[in-house]
Every structure is written in structure tokens, then in C-alpha cells.
Length: 382
Image (cartoon, rainbow, N blue to C red; front, side, top):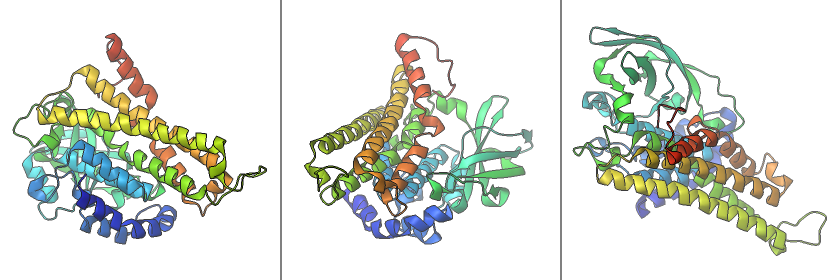
């Protein structure tokens, strides 16, 4: 990540931290927060350059989401998801991209790739109906990606704001301000150019397209899996910094320690948490860097490597949550007070780690099958 972008993100810290409690209570970001982030260009990181985007590498995508999440988990999550949806839209036909970004490079896109329906073909396109849950950032989105299954396999559909309704049902323990509600489409017409078949992308059609920008040649499934782990990295580092900052002024109850930092037991806990976070970053960034190299060379990584990258993401998320468990115990019960930012970090990370793409058992089973040469029967998205 460039130093200029890091400085830009850092300058937003007072606004993000100051608005975090209200956003958590309101279950959505304020319009002012979104506007400030848009003005800074944070949500344009992964969009095509011809629309004012940054065409960022996967590594940069993770670093940006991590840096924002260190200030507020929900904003970091939406940074990762809105930029991730930009990456997805960049694979639609150019006419669809013009529809989305032609009037503004700051257009926000929400959505989900879990199929719903029904869908039927009509002259010039399709009629789409259905409901899609956990659409992060849907309150501020002008477009949504909805998925359904066609005769030739799953496809993604681009739907403008006037064609969907939002069902306000996001009442969660963590990541509350992401407003990840359900959206409903009722018999909307979707022209053919706003439909993208997912099968060819899953099979690597984008990865070997030498005419495309390298940023859009990373393997689709492991890219999307890795993108949702970026915010976890920032949440973990924020928790570690908070606990260390308080260690010189906070004692350990029912002991002789007036400062936690003087306790060898506490020091060991800090070291354990820090190395778990190192593990998370090493796995996540190893995978991102390797995938960026594949993209630069227009190579589609083989099944074993793709499975390993998914496993890297799962191990990273699990390592962050293990670190947080240690840090919450080390800091003490005051970390669960409403006034403490630590409890929100813990809540946000706990919910984020349960995202369907990060489930350790799924990703590790796919990796294990690839390691022993067994057929993947877990998921067609590999």
C-alpha cells in the first residue's frame, strides 16, 4: 500500500472512531462517514483505472481493509466488501461497467453470490426474482449483485437500486454497523449485458486473459475468500495495541502487580497473541503475494494451490480469533464494558470469522482433499 493512501486513511481516524459507537447502535454507517470515505477514494481501490479506480493488487486490497478495520471493524469490513464488489463488476461486460460507474467513480455496490431465484429468460435478457441475505453495505449501495442458477450454471446479475427493496433485519452481535440486510427483487428485467456466467470465472477464464489488467487476473474463488480476511487482520492489531497501551496503568486483581506489564504471565500472553497475529498475516499475505504473481504472469494456479490459498485465509481468521481470546483474558473483564472499544473489536471479529467463505472446516477439507489427491466433493467453488 502506498504511503499516500496510508496517510489518507490515517487522517480519517478521528472521524471513524468518533462515529463508531453511534454507527454500532444505528446498525449502519452514517451518510457523513460514507461520504468522507468516498472523498478519500478508499472505496475505489479495486475499481478499473478508466473509471477513476486504483486497480489495486490483492495485497493492497487486504492492507487497505486492514488499515481501516484497525479504526472501526464495520467500516473496514465494508471497505473490503465494497472494493471486492468493484473487483467483481470489473469482470462484467464493459457496457455493464459503464452503467455502474459511468456517472460516478464512487458508486457503491453490494450483493451476494449465494444463488436465489427464480429467473427466466426473455428477449434481451432475464426476469429475476428472489431474496439475498447478508448484503453488506446495502443501505448505501446504488447497485446490487444478485446470483441465480441458469441452465448452464450459476450467474451473477447486476440490479440497480430502483429494482430492489431492502428488508431491515440485520440484528447481530458484531459487525452491526455493516447493515448487512436482505434485499428483494420482484420480477425485474436484467438485460443480457448485466449478466455474468460464474462457471468460466471459477474455471480461470479471467486469470489467463492477457488483455486484462493484472489486478483482475487473480483466481476468482481464492480472491474472494482472501478479501474477507483483510478486516480481521486490522481488528487483531487494534486489540493488541489497546491491551498493550493499558498494561502500564492497569493492575492485575488479587495479585501484587500494580501494572500488568510487570507480570511475566501477562508478557507471555501478549507474546502468544502477537505471534498468533503474525501467523495470520504471514498466511494471508503469503497467499495474496503468490496470487498477485500468478496474475502478473497470466497463470491460473492449479487446484492444490487454490486450495492452499483458501486454507491460508481460514487459518488467518482463526489465528486472529485465537489471539483475541488471549487478549480479552489478559486485559481483564473491563474489556467487556460498553465503554471499551475492545468489546466491539471482539464482537466484530467473532462475527466476521463466521463468514461462509472463511469456515475452517470447509477450507481445510478442500485443502486436505487436494493434498492427498482426492476429489473435491465439498464445493464447486474451488
